[in-house]
Image 1 (cartoon, rainbow, N blue to C red):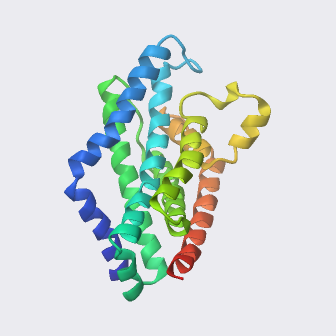
Image 2: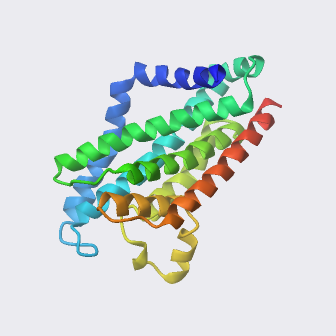
Length: 244
C-alpha cells in the first residue's frame, strides 16, 4: 500500500505545484466549446427536445474526463525520458500493480477535477446537471479506462513525440466522434456500429443520461468495467516490457 501511495502522492504533489495553471488549462477549451458550439452554432439546434447547451455540457464532461485521465501519460513520459524517475521506480521495491494503480488513481483524480470545473462552467452558463452517484460512477469508469490506456501507451512509446502522435490518432478523433458534440443517431448506421465499440461513446451516453435526470443503461457501465479491466491488465504487462 505504501509504494502505491508514494506513486500517487508524487503525482498529486506535481498537481498541487501548478494547481491554478492546470485548472486554467482544463477550463479554457470547455469555455471555448460552449461559446463556439453551444451559442454560435447550436443555439437554434435543439437535440431531442433539449437545448443544445444542455446536450453539450455532459458531453464535455465525458470528453474532458477522458483527456485529463489520459494526460497522465505525459507525466509518466517526462519521468521516464527526461527526469529518469522511472529508473528509480525500477530500483525501488515497487510492484507493477502498485505503479499502475498509483498512476491510474492520479488520472482519475485529474478527471474528477476537470468534471467539477465543467459542472461549474455549465452552471455559469445556466445549465444545471444532476450529479448523483451514478453520474460520478460513469466519470470514474471513463477515467479508469483512459488512465489505464495512458499507462500502457506511456510504457510502449519510444519518445515524447510518439506519445503525442498516438494521442492525435486515437484520443482526438474519439473526442469528436464519441457522442460529445452531436447524437450518433445522425450518422450512418455503419459508422454507429463502429463508434459503439468506442469507450467514450458509452461514457458520454451514461454521463448524459444521469446528468439530465434519467437512468443510464446498465450495459454502458458493464462495457466500461470490462474495457477498463482489460486496459488495466495490459498496462500491468506493459510495465515489464518498459523495464526491459
